[in-house]
Length: 480
Image (cartoon, rainbow, N blue to C red; front, side):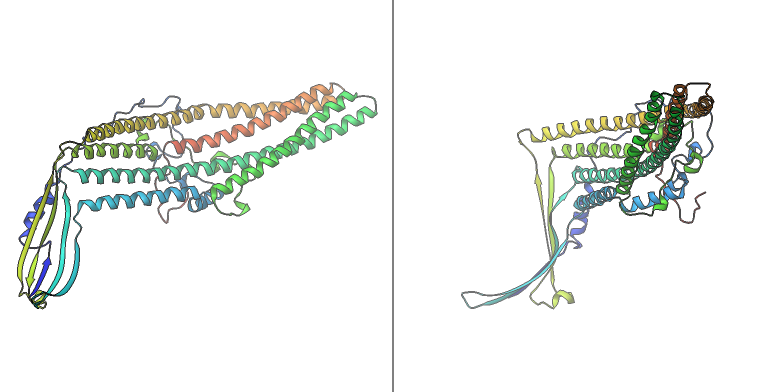
């Protein structure tokens, strides 16, 4: 006797039954998600009073970083870092892993169909020989998603994947800001080094004058010693800033992740107008909802929300399905010619939880607690973003006044030093007044460099904390 059995899921009789059962699992027990109200004021205080030139309020978050960064050297450094920074590569790999995990979970929504072909010959004790051929196409143990368990699991993994994608965007924006600030730190320390070298040279000239006046009996040894204090202080600063410049360069190279040409490095702090575009005033705090770190926190919250649906579904029956259908024939060739007899089977299995020692209750309580945790984390992310923008705006509101005052101080200190030195050379005033004026000028110039660096860092920080840089620059778009 020869027998052939083929299990075919798509059998005409099975299709309506299986299809109906699969489509039955279209509901979810997860709570409906509603975005929380902003736990922050609608607007920031300390905003600049006038609309700044450059980016409009509507465009603030839609301007690519290539249009925000004007200095071509810094733009090239950032481009290199986005391609080679190892920390960013690690984050992007996490995104791909999360995407693969989501695809694995999504596959559970669909039945897995397997196919196989087999054959055997056996001889009984009576001497009869039977041949059995088997070809199978079917499913086994497919769980019908009646209460949305698999759908909720898939939704949770999708939101986890989206959260990782937003985290990668946040990492990219943070890297752009870190590169820009590291580049500016290097420029500022080079300025400080040049200032220390200039001050040391001027102090050397003052020492020479004082030594000659000592030989003539005009000045005392205390004047010579006082002149030496400024000179040696500047020498110490030269050594310190030389080290700092080298360390700044090392830090920048680590962030970039590859070697770059020296002509991409700054020699001094650039003017703000040549470095970056300005960031507008008058933005509402609702723009924070588009920040990638805030979106990542919201996706985590949605994932936790979906997990509640998974925990709730565990209280209800689960239905699994094993189905087969096909043809039977004593001749192998009848499989392909249509001469075989049709056969089919369907074997649903229903499982109902009765006693689990409180495990399902505990799982639901855990899921609900996790949802509250991620809700708090989401609201805290919004509040932290608001605080970052508020701090940047507070600095933006007063930085120009500080720059103007610091520049005026340098001008006044320079004039005071020139006059005091002239009076000292003319024998009208004491050396101590000239020395005090020299120290005041040195300190004022150092503070001006630091204030200019703060101004530039603040512009970059404000762009970053508002979520700038999300939009990709279109090919063919110019940089102006």
